[in-house]
Length: 309
Ligand code: ATP
Image (cartoon, rainbow, N blue to C red):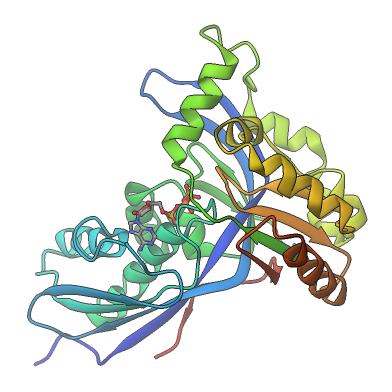
């Protein structure tokens, strides 16, 4: 009897952080964060097919230079799931890569989440969601959110999640930069800026997010209210490493964005628009300024990983 299903495809969303409060550097070398994740209609498509070994190929506008071996998070996800289930990691992955890389949009985490979902189906494991989420957390801080989608409060390293029920949709423009930024380098710069006593770290990042009123703004669906509540502790560090981001943020404001923020560890900037029509106008205006490689109008808030087969 065969224990594998046929080909399985999973479409999986990128994310931005509407709030990112970063606590002090812990003894384990990690920072505790308080964040609000927001999934976007900007997706990668991963297809998993039955095979006698593990292999991976990538196509798509954003696939250049990405590893197609154990350096790829989708590969590591397959290995981890197979080990957990006690079976060989036999799968042929094909990833259509649309999410810009090293951009603060968690594209690698998205592919890892897609790989977990696809292999769970392909190998007919039917693991409970909580078990998949625990494996996701071992792969990276943002992988559990990529499984969940929508909007969610994140704590710990970002893997402890609470969905924001009734979270509304918002319209955004993403200013995609010409280069990328390394997440560890941005955190290291934040620590350097804060200095050894970490005095400017949010002592309780969860409390900082709760006090900011961002959750109410997400639930309200009112972009004018949300505009005043976007915040990212990593933004000054990202700007220090990529000073052109100051121009990108200023250009977004000049073009009429309600607010702009560096997404996660950058260098993508996310600009909030009133509605989709405003986002399209804003994207054209921003692209005309030449401050970014590409300006993408996208909606966020109800995007979710979707199994297509
Ligand atoms: P985050 O916001 O989660 O910190 P990011 O969006 O800044 O992440 P990613 O696009 O996830 O960054 O990529 C970070 C690094 O991970 C890249 O430099 C890349 O080499 C590596 N990587 C491994 N697998 C993938 C993948 N499937 N897609 C993108 N990057 C991957």
